[in-house]
Each structure stands twice: as structure tokens, then as C-alpha cells.
Length: 438
Ligand code: 5AD
Ligand code: SF4
Image (cartoon, rainbow, N blue to C red; front, side):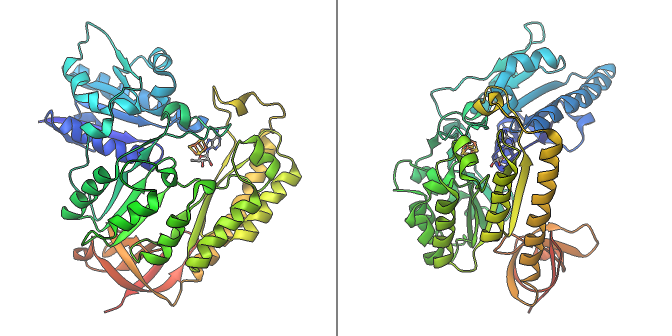
């Protein structure tokens, strides 16, 4: 039996893509393995968003090359494939730096994997495919079955916002929205094969503007009609593209979970402008207020970048004040990373590394305190938890509350895939514990 080992870096879109690449190779008879040494294909799905993420790839290629060489000593051939955003950003350079790589394939070309693998010929040499083809990869790789009770469904890909720090518009290309009927067909298929929760994915998911619906709010409302679909989520949203129809869906659609990831990036209008974000801190807060007006218990999360070029101490203080003003349930925060080809990488007044580190620590301390307070606030409540994983400790399973809090209970693993009522008895900054209520 031929085997493929897949390692995924980066965002949920990459996790989704890795699953489809696994399926595409499955058509050729490859089955998945968790053990690199037994794999005929080693596939790394890469992330380019920050320098750290990109550099991880090169150390991983080194490790994979050792596996490849060890297999060769046993007379076994191994294909090392690198996929994802690093390839789109510079496939040729990647092949130059990483000699062990045989095939490099960008995010818009995954449907061509079977053909690339079958036609690969060591004598002809290594291959890079990183164009933006006219056909949609979604037409070739529809999701056909649920991979668990909670599934991803890509509804939109690419980004037209061109934030001055971000590589996504270059690696994922311009915005493409899948037609509504395609999304609904895939959602039905996922539910028919066991999905209870669907997370709609898009780099700019609330900017969806495809055929067959007005906006993402309509898509959510149509999905709510699917029998057996108990939870709907979506990520990632761009603040100023939020529509009333999406916001009010949080009031009208019980299946739509009370959680919104709404990255602000900075609390300073000067920095937001330099970032080319199309809103002010006040406008962002107004959007948050509109969500809270229709769904007072909604949990809000965000991404933050500290140390953007030109960010002063007073700009940073405004980010801290914004965090106090909004009150986040959870967040991701990063030091600005100068990415090749982006306008921000060339801006004057780059912030010193030590200053970035110090600001990140202050921000994360505040965000963590808010996250802990949010979690502590659920103690004593009884919440629905969708059980998705076996716990590390024996007899434990874990899942997620409507507010996306990871929750551990002692329970039979037969409950995996089910939504159970859990009385929350304990909380830390990162997770909850509780008891199942009969
Ligand atoms: N430096 C630091 N963080 C970045 N992000 C995107 N590009 C950069 C960069 N160059 C962060 C943003 C975004 C998240 C996915 O990654 O906060 O929302
Ligand atoms: Fe990048 Fe900005 Fe697009 Fe988000 S909205 S993917 S940060 S360019």
C-alpha cells in the first residue's frame, strides 16, 4: 500500500487544503500515515505569514530529507512535496534553498497534484507549479465527507484588502467566492456524513460576494435550514465589511454560535492608516456594539500586531486602551514581521526588536487576564459542549462550548461527536473543566 505523510503549518485554510490534498492523493491509492519513515510521499503544507513560520519549513525540509535518505538506503523512493503559501511566494527560490524538494505546488493548484505525482520523473527534474489557473480548484476538489463532528468548509479564498504588512493577497490571490449552491451542497454532504458543526472559512469570509445570495448572512440563514446541522461558525472577518444581515443572523439563527473573530490589529488610528486597514478604532467599537446589541453574550476575539513601523509608545497605549474597552474572550498577538514584497517591509522607522518584545509581553499579559476572566465567568453555568477529542488523561474527553472554550470532562468516549450539557466547575486561562448533566 502506498502511503503519504502530511504535515500542516499555519491557518485553518491550510488544514482544510491538506485534507483535500490527502483526498486527491487518495484517488491514486495513497493512504495517510503519521509515520514519515513509512511514507512514499512526504508533503509539507507551508505558511508564509510571518518570518518564523516560513523559516520553520526549512528545518522541516532538513528532517524530511533525512527520512528520504534513510529510505533510499533501503532502496525506497520518496517524493518530497512542498505545498502552500511559501511556494506561491517564491517556488524557484525554495527549490534553490531546499535541494531535497521534488515538487513545489502553490495553493491554487492542488487539484493538479495527482497529475504532478504520476508524471514526476527524476531524470526530467524537479517541478514548480505556482500560477493562478483560470479554473477553480474547488470544482475539482469538493469535500465529499465529514472528517469528524466539526468540519471546515471554504466559502471564499484570497484577499483584496492589501494590508500593508500582509502577504496573503500575493500568496492566495484576489478574492474568489464559491457560488451559494455549491456551498450548500457541500454543507449537506458534510451533515449527511456526520458533521454537526460547520466552520465557514475564508481569508475575508464576511466579504463573500458570490452567486446565489446577497452575502454571508444569507448563506448562514440558508444553512440553518439543513436538518442535523447544529452549529455554524465563520472566520476570519474584516471589520468594515461586516453587514447588518450577518450581525442580525446572530439574533435570528440559533445554530449560529455566539463567537466572532474580528481582528483589529491596532488600537491607534495612525497605525491603522499606515496598515491600510479601512476603519478607525471607534468604527471598530461601533461594530462590536452592534454585535452585542443583538447578542449580548457574544464572545469576541481578535488578532493584534505590535511594533508596526512607526508605532510609538502612545500608539501602543491606544491598543492597550482598546483592549480594555472591548474586553476579549481570546486573542492572537504577534510582533510585526517584515515580509518580502510588502509595503510595510520598506517603511521607515522600523521598531527595535527589544521594544516589540516588551510591548508584546504587556499586551499578552492583558489579553490573557481577559481570557481568564471570561473563562472564570462561565463557572457554574451549564453549557452545550460538542465533544471532539479524547483527552490526554485516561477517561477524559474534550470539546468546545458555544464560545469556543476548550472543555474537559470525565466521560465515556462513546460521547465523542455528540453535543452534551456540561456544568462548568473549573476554569483556567486556556480551558474549562466540568461535569456532564443528565
Ligand atoms: N507580521 C505580523 N503579523 C502578521 N499577520 C499578518 N501579517 C503579519 C506580519 N507581517 C497577523 C495578523 C493577521 C494574522 C493572521 O496574522 O494579525 O490577522
Ligand atoms: Fe492580510 Fe489584510 Fe487580507 Fe487579512 S485583510 S488577509 S491581514 S491583507
